[in-house]
Image (cartoon, rainbow, N blue to C red; front, side, top):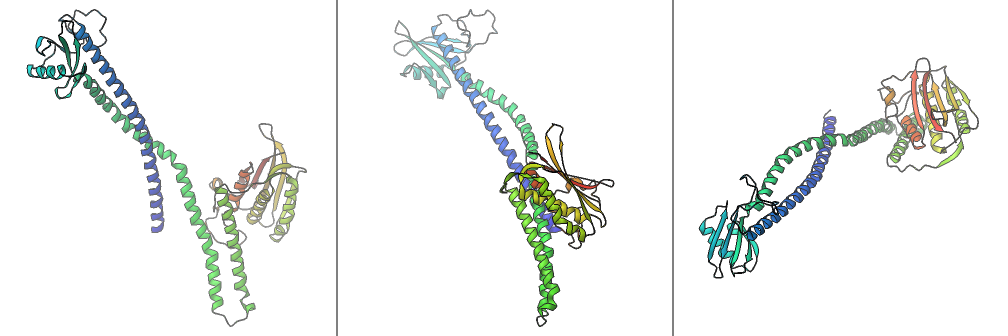
Length: 433
């Protein structure tokens, strides 16, 4: 019980890690897109503000009045008469050739004399006509006048950075809730995405457990037989025949199980070679029925067949032969003594008007319950929960799974019905050619 618990916990841990990884990958990809869009928006806003500040400085330098300097986008327009119009505060100073301030026009701008003197000194002595005074948090632009004087306009650098900062704060207030919602959505989608992986993982784990269980029985019998013979080394081989035959039978069972598992492993890995040819299914069914008639006779049953002639189709001959043998063997294995196994092969058109071949095998015995029907093609599944290997019903529960795999690979279908009146019928359908 502890082993199952640990195994289940280990499986859950692997799936949970995959789900978390998928969630964070999705979150990371979307976050990168959001970050790229936000960065582009911030850069665009910064550049736009920079251009607006430059235009404001130029307007201020070109203005000969002492009216308030209008903000970006107001150039070329009549200044409104109301005082509520938006503008960027500008300080314009006029400096003579000696660097002395001769005039100051501070429209709606608050700046100390000390700061203004430092700003004028730094900008006037610079070779650049415009630039930033980082230590004073100012942006300036100069213009040389005809009278040898120089006009310098200053605005606060906060006019350049504040809109970007405000946009960043607003974006954060929006993005954080969006990321939380996105995480929930990604986690939900991850849960859906890993479900096939989880089913595959559980299927593989169950397959391994069932295979180990099936191999355990014949190995135990073989080891027990050898142990018995080890205690009778002085006896003749003939007297040990019972244990030798038992060992041989269990060895054959192991060989069959390993071959079946190898077939399914190849099918899972898409390494099963398929050689489709146009063949007469009628002849294949008739020859298979002849092969199983002695087996039916020994089991106290008979086989009644109704096979339509010249039913040609394209399929892998060896695979379809194996499918037919599996269905016949299964019917004889679970049919009641004294009953007949009905084998039918006929041609008919489906709803789309396409001609199809239908091969069916029906037996009368223990019915398959409605609860078991959806699972009969699962690996190692048997309606009887006991896993004994005695009697005519011995098997591993792999035959029908292999038959279903063969039907799928040959572009056919395999279905099953079971009722008291009609018995248990397996039907293989394939397109006629």
